Amino acid sequence: MITGTSQADCAILIIAAGTGEFEAGISKDGQTREHALLAYTLGVKNLIVAINKMDTTKWSEARYQEIIKETSNFIKKVGYNPKAVSFVPISGFNGDNMLEASSNCPWYKGWERETKDGKQSGKTLLEAIDAIKPPTRPTDNPLRLLLQDVYKLGGIVSVPVGRV
Image (cartoon, rainbow, N blue to C red):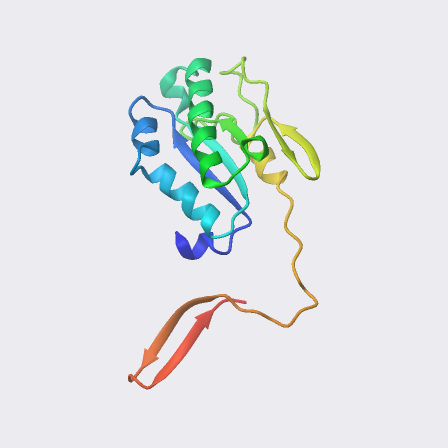
């Protein structure tokens, strides 16, 4: 996870909406909290939160709002601005709100995020991904290579490994 995250422009935090699953993920030692912290620490400034398994909660708007409130609180502590984060209720099992808007959640009006480029909005996870603007890259500077590993050959030679 760390190698991939260190090269990412955006992180998608998948949160399970099921009772007990969400609470375990955001607990003090929860994996959801840990992944959000790692992503921010490794320089990933764009975040999308996909609230999965909404079908198991019968597409409860109250549960969705509860998860947004709790998640916003802890991602703010990590360093993300909750207003710049897209929150999308999905069902990966059924494909709801992944590529096309779902009729199973008539209360869901869509996600909205505010960035320095202005406001963006949409309904699906795909639209949230498409709305992420790639960062400007220093293409005029000399080549810099992110190292992914260093191999030691015979205890004498070190070979740095990366990808262009």
